[in-house]
Length: 91
Image 1 (cartoon, helix red, strand yellow):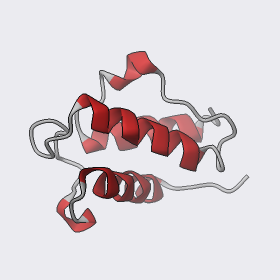
Image 2 (cartoon, rainbow, N blue to C red):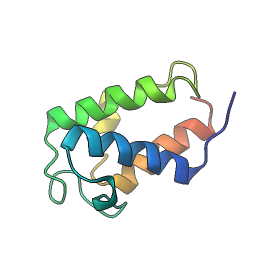
Image 3 (cartoon, helix red, strand yellow):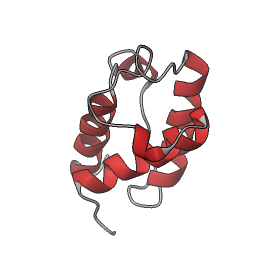
């Protein structure tokens, strides 16, 4: 199993958001709110979850983001912390 650090998690999330929202990756920072700063609607967040689950399952088998946890992820930092925490635990 390859490991990934927190910065790597941010890079993956930033790159996926960049593609989904069609904005420059460099315009995305951890402090930004998905809805207020990035104009990401619920459909964009669902796309992000699906993309992360697909990409991260190569690092953590069966990686999933629970639907009930998604509502707590308001900022890019929330998502990075959540995903990194799940990866660190091997889930």
